[in-house]
Image 1 (cartoon, rainbow, N blue to C red):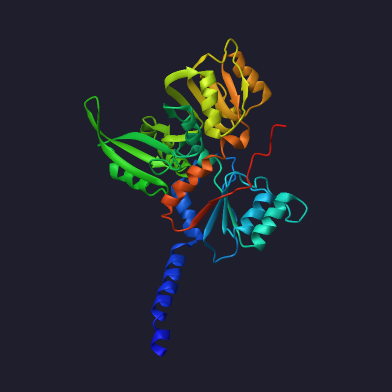
Image 2: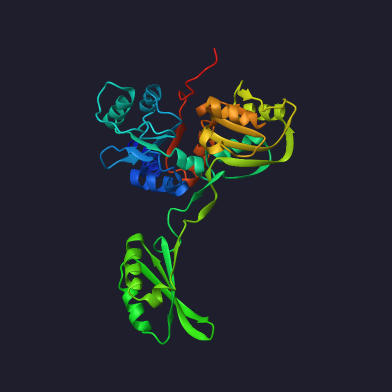
Length: 377
């Protein structure tokens, strides 16, 4: 009898070990997760006016077992978050945008913060970082158009300059001058990197000096050169630009492989966004049979991004009345699908991409209660 009682123990131990092992694979430290999310789509892609990143952080240590994806964080969605025991909310739209002067129970956004902190739930928002990313929201929206090539309407710039500093100063030094003295002086200025190479002006051998300078260092360099008129007269000062990023930026200008009728394009967009209706403004002189070859699109609110872009069709969530009139007067058709309807479907793709990017280390779930606040009645 004793041996028969003992026999099941190894099985039980193995089962417990398995649970522990699985559990260890289903947690990530919050800071490690945030770093991985930034690797997936850098927050540096976001617009300067936006409020992105970690908006609510519970006291450390904080680990994440379940990441909850939603387009908008409402009180109804927060109920779902708490029911499903999520540890971190990824809300595409930032629930905190304008500064809060107090955290009370008076407004729904303040209540979101209170409930998140009380239940140790973090809130993270990527917003326009995901709009600009090559694998982001606008790229997903373009998938509904059919086979096409696309490029950002407003390309993003790299977070940093290609070299130290944002200015370049170039000047020549004659060999007959005290080259060592000049080099020693400029190398002694903080925020300056120096390169030099041989140059020739006419029959005269010279040394060309390039200085990459910060804004502060530039003033000191100019001050030094201005005290030597011969150097100063040969000086060029260039303002450096951050390089543009390939496939990254706001909006997309899409050129279809084959043009289609506007009616066909409407059907494609409805199917992709799972909508029974859209709003359409026909361009002057256009009909449902007019051909569409070039589509300019912007998820969410597209007025500022699409304005002035040459295309057969503008596709976005919402535009101002007068911007619609301007586009239509130029023969450009406009399709509006409501703001969040042009974004929410991306979350399904995002879940799959993050599963792969995070190597299935945590659970990732989609909100079932998140929906566009507008409905047709």
